Image (cartoon, rainbow, N blue to C red; front, top):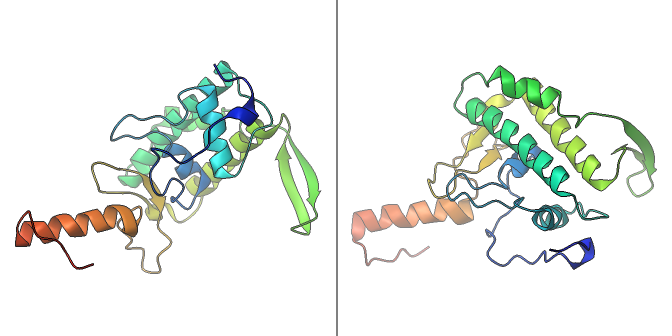
Length: 201
């Protein structure tokens, strides 16, 4: 078992072309579990550390099994909530209660970010606590905001990732046009022109 966080493999082998495309931290966190294949990027502590590093939020130590399970539990509640929201129905109150009680909005510290020239929030308890705090804060901001209709799911049944639609008219359909959108274009082209046909784009 990997115990040294600096030895975690963060290379993109066997990962989607676009791992962080949702446009919101809490939605990217939900996408760490593939609802199409069951693949889990937080399956074990080293996997959580690798995901955090690829996100640009490296951890200073390897998470414990309990901390990793806690992050998966938080993700499970968020998946229930955002599944419902993306379908236009009320999320389960039990999941909302669990999110509110998750501890992600616990004690914080303020520190001055010289590069940004402003104060920044840092959760007490290290990098993983800070990441958890930011995921919960982002989810709460989404759920209490006025743009719930822009929380969407990719319609590709091999994907089903969440994304936040920032298009002007709110009509974005795919998680990534260069990935699932292109696959759909190819499929529709071949449906019209035959299985062996190749589109020109």
